[in-house]
Length: 337
Image (tube, rainbow, N blue to C red; front, side):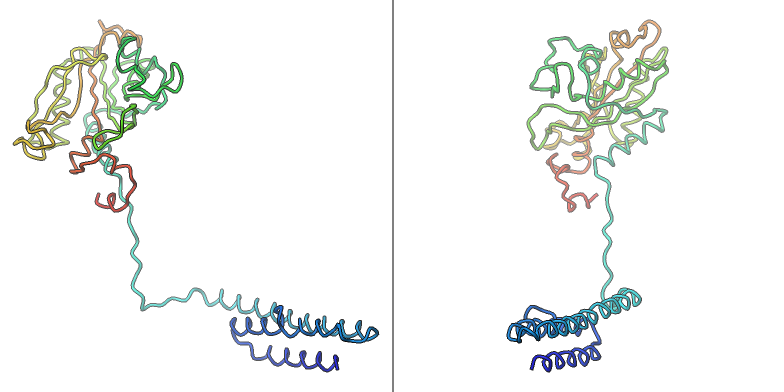
């Protein structure tokens, strides 16, 4: 009879509940009584064969059995969870320790930080400026003629007719001169952009460190002394150096500085094109037109400026033969530094 089946299932639930000692036992209990193919589901199937006048009582009895089984699962689940939390995480002390990977500073960041430290020790401050510039600060105020090749779309990323991604960090110099009164002695590190093809030696963005010193009676000799002091501090006191005349729109006179190749010690190699020399920076005296544009009288103040590319220096210092490697975010490469 149906009442006997229900009573038997109730008895089995009570007996099984007393023997549950773990979460695995509880899961087996749930599957046996409460799953779709469990014993209680079978009771509901058998309810269809019960006489109509007996169905309400039989259905009520089955519901009571089901609530008994569900209550057992609920209470024991809570108990086992509490016991697990109280016991805390299990630790196998025989396992080897886990290695904690240490992060490393990017080689370009290391190069910039070393440059900054050297110039700060020489009395320079540090200034930053916007990477999105207007045409005036990026070109016009720096004495670029309207038809200068650098204004061409092939070299510059134009966002609008007169808005560009800065092509150098020198515009920070103009902004400083516009709002501050000399003396000004700062370096200006940052990222710059050029519309160039990506290759092993060039990228569409790279890093520069520019510097400027403007005051009364600043001389070309002071510029040379500053560059020599930096080069010896950064590359080593044993390097040789030379200055060559050059041209930049925003300086006059202008120069470029070479040092002996620190990879071959000046003997000649593929990196220095077998000359024994490496070009490391460009510099010069701030052009009078730049001073005038910034609101200063070139008869009263003078100054010098310099700039160097960080990425190329990092390539040479660390012996990397492809600039793209710096920006692939390969931790195996970065961990070497």
